[in-house]
Length: 381
Ligand SMILES: CC(=O)SCCNC(=O)CCNC(=O)[C@H](O)C(C)(C)COP(=O)(O)OP(=O)(O)OC[C@H]1O[C@@H](n2cnc3c(N)ncnc32)[C@H](O)[C@@H]1OP(=O)(O)O
Ligand SMILES: O=C([O-])CC(=O)C(=O)O
Image 1 (cartoon, rainbow, N blue to C red):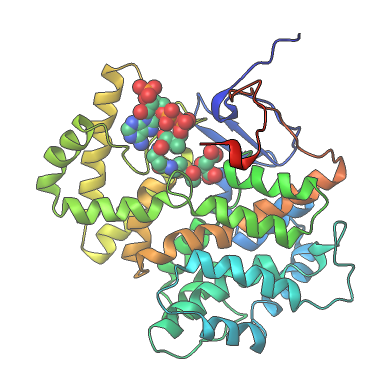
Image 2 (cartoon, rainbow, N blue to C red):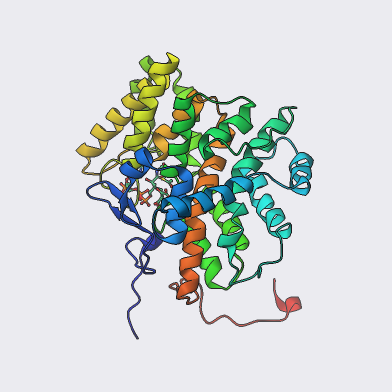
C-alpha cells in the first residue's frame, strides 16, 4: 500500500501553479503579479489593481481610460437589488447579506454574455464593483437613512466612504480607504481563495465561487478577525489596561485576534502599511488610544512568543479595524469591506483555475470503524 502523507490544514501542500501572487513569508514580502504591495498601495489606485489582477499587468493610460469608465459606470446597483437589500432583516450580519447579494447580482446580470462555467465575467465585473455599494446601501438603510447612489468622479475608496456617509471624504480619508482596498485585494492560496478555486474546479459559475468564498472569509480565523480585533480593543478599554489584559489572555491560552499567520514568519507587510495609516489618522483625528492599545498588545505577544520560539506577528487584520474606526466605519462592516476588495483576487483565481482546470479532490485517512454488519431494526436493542 502506498503511504499517504497527511498535512493537517493542508500546511505546505502545493495545490496549484499560479501567476497571480507571490509571498516571501520569511522576508515579509508580498507581490501582486510581480509588483511589491508597498508600491501598489502608495502609487496605484484600487481600480488599477483590479485591472492588474484580472488582466495580468497594470493598464496603460489608454487601457485605464476605457476600464475606469466601465467600472465606474457599473458602480450603481439595479432597483431590484436595492429592494432586496431593503427587505433584509436589519440585524443580519452584512457578510450574510453579501452572500445572498451575489445570487441576486448573478440573476440580474445582462444575459447577453454567456453565463456559465466559461462566462466572460471580465466584461461585466459588477460583482467586483457593486459589493461595496451593497455594503454601504445596507448600512444606511438599516440605520433608517436613504440610499446614496455612487459617484463616478471619486476613487473607489473615496466613493465607498461617500456612499456610506452621504458626504465627500477628505482627500486623506479617501486615499487611505482606497489603499486599504488595495491591501486586501489578493493573497495567494488563502482559505477563501482556495474555496473559490475548488468551486470553480467543478465548472460551477463565478458567482457560486464568490459566494462560497465570502462564506469562508466570514470566519474568525480568516477575514472575520478584523471585527474581533476591534472587540478586543474595546474590551481592553484604555492603553493602561493593555499589558495586563494581554498577559492574562496569553495565560488563558486565548488566540490573540489579528496576530499569527500560516505563511508569514515576519510582520505581514500589509500590517506595516496599515500601521502607518493608523499612526497618521490617529494624529489627524487627535485620538491615538486604539493605536497605543494595539502597539502594547503587539509588543507583549511578540516577546512572549519569541521566548517560546514562535513567530507570531500582526497580520493584515490587526490594524485595519482601528483604521476603519477612525474613518467612522462601524465594526460590522470591516469584514464586508475585506470581501468587497478580495472579490477582485477571487475572480482572478477563478479565471486562472479555468485556464488549466482539474477538479480538486484530495483524500483523507479513514479513522472510522470496520467490519460492521446490519441487523434488522427489530433485532437491535
Ligand atoms: C486575512 C487573514 O486571514 S489573516 C489571519 C486572521 N486570523 C487571525 O488573526 C486569528 C488569530 N490567528 C490564528 O488563529 C492563526 O495564527 C492563523 C489561523 C492565522 C494561522 O493558523 P495556523 O497556521 O494553523 O497556526 P496555528 O494556529 O497552529 O499557530 C501556530 C502556533 O502559534 C500560536 N499562535 C498562532 N497565532 C496565535 C495567536 N493569534 N494568538 C496566540 N497564539 C497564536 C498557536 O497557539 C500555535 O502554538 P502551538 O504550536 O504551541 O500550538
Ligand atoms: O493568506 C492567508 O492565509 C490569510 C490572509 O492573510 C489573507 O487571505 O489575506
